[in-house]
Image (cartoon, rainbow, N blue to C red):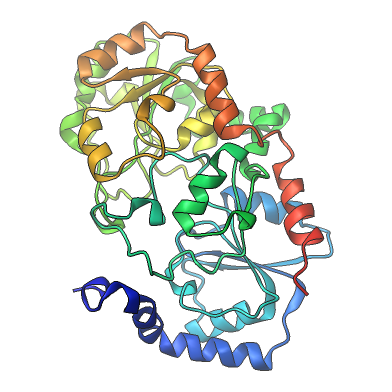
Length: 383
């Protein structure tokens, strides 16, 4: 049984607060006795053991500045009370994912609760945009409601994030995505490539095919990738000897894809690599499905294949912000035979890719982090 099944929709936010009453009351008290620091920034990333992605880029940009940075990470070992005290002491709260324990809290009016969402663009529907789909929330939920700022990758997706987070348009800022700044730094790209190849020397002088699908399943606990979708041995054996297959499963997926012994020397499990961008730099070709990795990969002029055996089912159950065709600036394969053919005969989709980039990535120009710091942290002050 869950909260949604216990009461009518209009009562749901009250039940959310009631369920979190100890946190709500304690946080209210801490805000009364603790003066918040306007130059303090707290990165709240409960699904990460270390800063990465957008938060890492922002934290790096703030080094040596007037801002101080603290973190709340997975496995930090601090108590709930200590976490709430940290929240009360900081004017600027930055989150990069779904963060349930924050939503029932009532922040002081000066606070900035800033969502720097971990994925780029607008692909799979999320939040309130999934209303009516299996496992979706209810319209009166407090989830995502207390953000004061949300940054997005382009003007073209502002309305999508209004819908997804139940936010007014003036809270959505098309400033670009901080971690995409990496794609404009050739020196750093080369350093990341060399570092990855030093960890996986078998990649060097090979054509790396990166297989990076998203997960299936309604919840993190049920996250999986259907094993029947891919016969790894048959795929690898159909490819020339200078090709090597890299597997990068979604972090939610705990049970990996078994690598057959017959092709073990030509397949690498890269799922433990947290930063998928580092893998993209070494990839000759990317195979994915409904993953937002397509947005970062668009910065690279390389072949892309959408492998979607379950497209109709996925669209029905999860759905997309736009027609699936809007995203496909690469080949589409619906079975393994089509996938193998697309790998061996990659097609060019230049015109479609240009339209895709303008729609979803036009604010990402290598200066997204600096714009975030100047626009959100420095220029806007509710006090």
